[in-house]
Image (cartoon, rainbow, N blue to C red):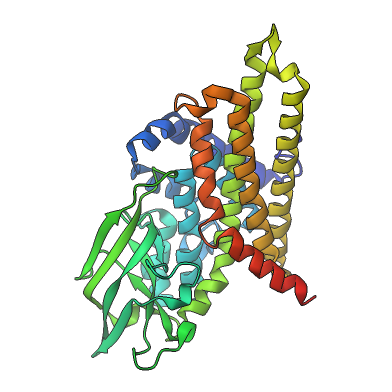
Length: 386
């Protein structure tokens, strides 16, 4: 297939080589066992931080690498091709938590939290969704009320990625009152840490895929949050989150490309080795056509991802572009992993071979940080206004 390393700068090539070497040594050999055991490997946080991979988009003054989006997405694809669970930890950390702090945090907040996050000393998480507020995120009910200079918070957050090990959680919490609800304009952003009284990690979800990435509920029971933990202006948290979602959705597209690439390569190699009717199945036109379609869709998704990232770096994104990228890449990953299982036949349906894990991991890319249906709404509204 047309290789993904064409047209890279020398720096980008070095980033890909570093990420691939790290994945080959520290991730790929263990990914199947981590999946079986639903095991999150905490040592990876500091190792990724030491490489700069947890602060790739952050300014150098906060110990980041100050790189453009494409370089970050190239590294993320390499990690995702080895283990999507590790990639989602890296993606979440590099998107909403760090980007919101960088864009809207005070200098004191950045020094206290952002620099250690870039170094891998603190893992970041993001808490928006609740059991009754998913796609309709502005309907959250987690409530904060003032008490002196502090805020007292009560409520429960759902689907928090890396919630078991996060040292910093950026949480969306209502600061309007039950008698004066203002939908999205009543939501503020807070910096939470596990040491706050009333902060509890609750139910861990037993998921179909991304099993080595812990997804949990967070319960806040009379949690006292210092006043200086609010990010930006009261009531603007939801707007900050929506502006930062671009990074997260591009990250999911890169994860999708990485998962799909791993599935394609596994199917291609299996087709060359597996013999039926006296010849490798790769010599049958039916299999060749599958591989051709897989390679084409994979290349198209990667090209769209890099084009969208370049537009973001230049500040020329138009509405709907990031959603197009996320939608196309995630549905491509689901399609390719399905075809990979078909190429493997019965072997693809058993856990001894990796494609069933790729299939399970791919599915959630069509769901989190905006379902495919939500992406189509965003795209539809954008193109109808052109």
